[in-house]
Length: 251
Image (cartoon, rainbow, N blue to C red):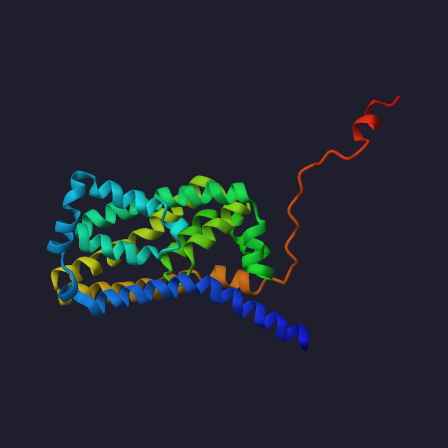
């Protein structure tokens, strides 16, 4: 009984860590909606960006590229981009930033190996890693399509477990397109005081969430129904042992 209780507690903590970025993201979007155009509008933002001149888009893309290291939610930054640059420009800049950040995450995850993800996901990691290797493009595509899915964590899990680079990153970029456009439109509508545009964007984000859940059921089922396994220990680098060299040279 105690083991079941500990397992449930561990699983709850894991999901809380995974869902925390999504909760922060939704909270940030709600805050932007509550503040609305009375707090800040596109004209005010553009005046703030004047000192950067033509480098403002580059600074925005560069910040998005390193966003995972800041732990800031991508949706809020995309909405702010919509407020700063408008829907289409913010969508283009955000997709560029998504490609760069996904590339950064992929190679950092490959460098660090599986151990960090094993600690985060616990007993579910082997199933997640297996799904990521088997369906690399679909795995990241559906993770991005579904706002409830922690995209960064899924990409890191796939990269650490050996998923291919181009299918994984391409899945991130393509899966991000609907949500990025709707979120940028949401921010642009707020900054311009267009209630209808804001409402349509919010409805679109809800539809995207529902579709992501529907299309992602296969992966959720594969992960949740997988037997609980102990994560395989990561291979330790070979070390020189005392006397090893002497043993090799002794006839």
